[in-house]
Amino acid sequence: MGEAALEAEVRALFDCADGDPHAEVAEMVDAFSAFALADVPVREPRSGLRAEVMAAATGVGVRGRPAPAAGVASFARSARLPWTLAAGFALAAGLALLSWDAERSRAGRLEGEVARLAERAEASDLRVRELASQVDQSFKAFIVWDDSRGTGVLKVENLPALGEGGDYQLWVVSEGYENPLDGGVFDTEGGKAEMRIVTRDTSSAPASAGGVTLFAISREREGGVPISETKDFVLTAAY
Amino acid sequence: MSLQIQTLPPAAEGLVPFRWRERRRSDMALVVAEEEQLDSEILDGLVRRDPAVLGVAYDRYSRPLYSLAYKMLRNDRECEEVVQDTFVSLWKKGNTVDLSRGKLFSWLAAVLRNRCIDRVRAQGRRIPGPPGVEAGPAREVATAETAADLVYGRERAARVREAMGRLPEKQSEMIELAFFGGLTHSEIAERVGESLGTVKSRIRYGLAKLKAALAGEEVADG
Image (cartoon, rainbow over all chains, first blue to last red; front, side, top):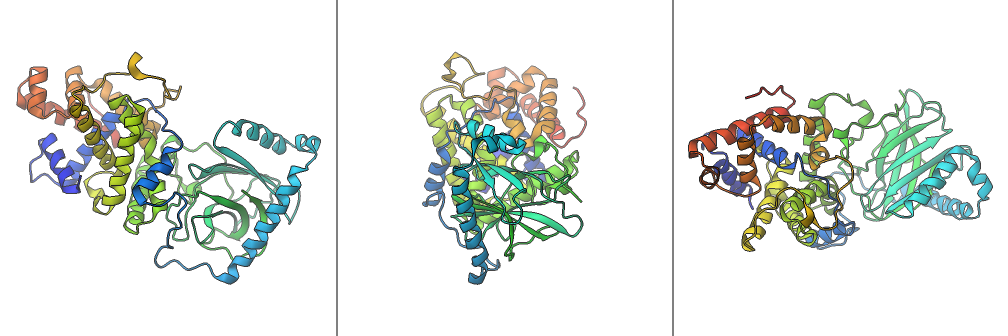
């Protein structure tokens, strides 16, 4: 249905005269939708539907590699090195975690939370990833990530506050994107922070991060940056 | 300048802006502005033919659309088909959507509604009433959350429900027949036994009250 056809239907439905302004018709349309939804119980679509819809609409898999948006700076080859190193460290840290002493895992509150979440996540699409630090091993963070929806939650502990002028910035490296996605900025209070992750690409447009390969946290200037050029990631985790 | 850990307001679910910590959580106008901005960004991405943006739109609107489809069709397979058709339409025609003519969700809901009505009419069925025993194995979330909560946030959805609760039963029935039944004003007039003029004025007046509720304005009775 084209826009003109939709508006024609709406005008007929609400008996709007041709001279009625668009805005008034639009408000009636919105009210109509609100009415329709008001008492509709939430029903969850099947988790695999998303991939099918994406393939049917775009003709490519969910994790197709979109072209970078016009005007967005490309990710310089030289800038890839820190990310490669971060990925290498994250992979090594992940392997080390596999052999972690279970008693030590239960010792810390955050580790305990990770274990409980991981147990619960096994029965869902969620994945729990603990981030490791090369800077200070007391830095703790984990991410609960829903790859089917491309969203998650970050929780950190023992990370010193940066205060005025600086922010931590989360990066999400996704197969579908040329550049690491901006996962949001935060600072800590009492060493702690929690943030819902909504990814954006380098043009600050919303981005759906499927096929995640790496999470990384960097120190950046206040408010964050479109593309990180840091060589020292505070925390990383391979997906 | 540190992150305050708080539960995000329901209206912000799924649309947390990049600098969300700066938001004023009770400011409904700001929430609406953010919704409009995100819709605008989605449409910009569709113009660029960015598949990832369609994914963002799906994540944001598939649940309420699916819920709405289920109310009309009561069949998961058919719901999946109409939801898929709706997003295919968005991908193909997203560049024609004009947000000055209604919110993106309203466009999607209108497309989905028409698909549902086409199916119901083609099979000689009637739009089902409230969920009953015919609903099949339920996947409805056990809480009282509604599809409106997902799109408009709890505060505005509650206002709309409150406004709906104040509508006279016949007025509410007329709007329901128009949306879910796809009936014309004449058909509604015949169905409810009122004059055409009465049907037109009651539907418009009822929707005007819902529109005010959606905008956060006080809604008068009557």
